[in-house]
Amino acid sequence: MDEVMEQAREAGAAIVKLAQERFYGGYAGYFTDHDGHLWEVVWNPANLQEGD
Image (cartoon, rainbow, N blue to C red; front, side, top):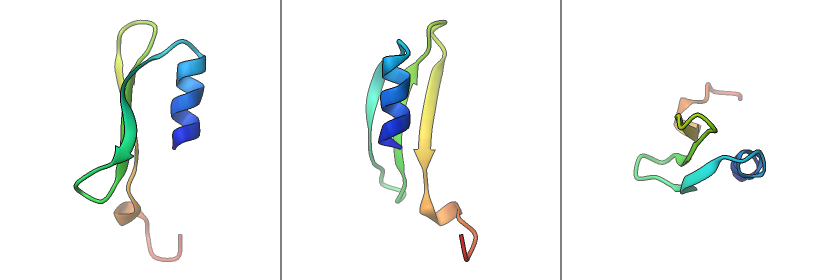
């Protein structure tokens, strides 16, 4: 997750909110791309199927 945020930053994205643990049990961060679109990068273990 942090690697994805770093790749986005290196590609010129503006980090809006660093990735961090969220109240719902996930981990998420936000950045904007060159065109100003807001992206969310998220990982939530609750969404994994059993055995993943």
